[in-house]
Length: 448
Image 1 (spheres, rainbow, N blue to C red):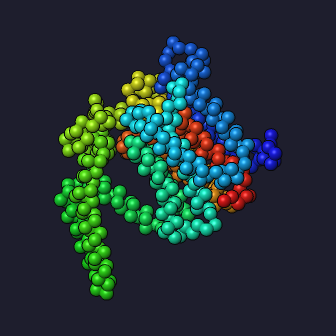
Image 2: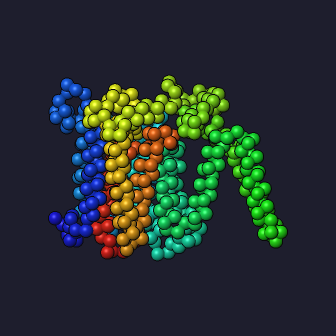
């Protein structure tokens, strides 16, 4: 089967990735079925009715098969030709949510399509941002070693992230940081990574430690640095000014900036989730939105770590080998909130135990390694950057979602790729992966 340009749907296709994709989608439908199926109901008759989440997911999967086939039959040059236009269209859709958006769980990031279906532009914009970034970096006149080029690339990644934050969708906004992994592969200086990691460590230390003690520790580190560099400082007084400036910046962050953000920028429930991650309690009396009774501040009817505690109980009850298919008491008893979306991993943990989770994560690891291998064999910079974007997005989604369910990361509403229920999410990852497969099929070409 081929088009007028001689593109064969099977020629050059990486069938390993297609197989892994199909396996993961099937596992996702199985997990949704496990948490929703009730005894006494004919599973065969309910499978394709569209009235249950698992039957809807099957219909979503069928649509994704059609979309994937269309992508495999398309011309690779289309994605370079329309990359920038698609990115502008994605930004337009995200802006449109502020006018036509539907508020779901406190996030105004959905556009209602009718028939109970909703579109989340921030999900689709990940595809468009990946294409636009690949297009920009692969341009002949782009010298990515220049700071100007790096700033433009960062702006491409961060623009939809900023809009996601304004939509109160901080989870999806965080996913856009995955593009910085791609930029490091393409030559972004390593000191930026060091600065980012150090800043994150400082924020965590601010949450954990008493403010005065942390200030003393930072002062001690600065004094030790000055002592070690005393000879260089004698020759260059500017170095002393630099060390003191860094010390003042860090103390300012921990004494003023972090408390201000948690008390005045974040909502009470967001601050609670982050504090609970490090084993601390947050006093909502300090939070401005809670004091003002903000309409969009979620009321806390249960302890804020309720979801995580129930998730841990469900996963822990699975033990080594699990309770078995349709035998989970926690997930089938609906003790775990959002167990068919953000906490879908708990159904695997309870039903198949540590062994099942290990095998499942092994499938993800195999997929990621296969994508990295695919990226490195590309002749085209465009195809390589796009493939690394896909790998980075998948990795961040997987890492955050799994860590979220076991209490190592705040609850921020990140779906598990190809597993969590949702048409927007499944369609987004399908398009992401199959555009990459289509580009790889033409790896002998140099696309720009």
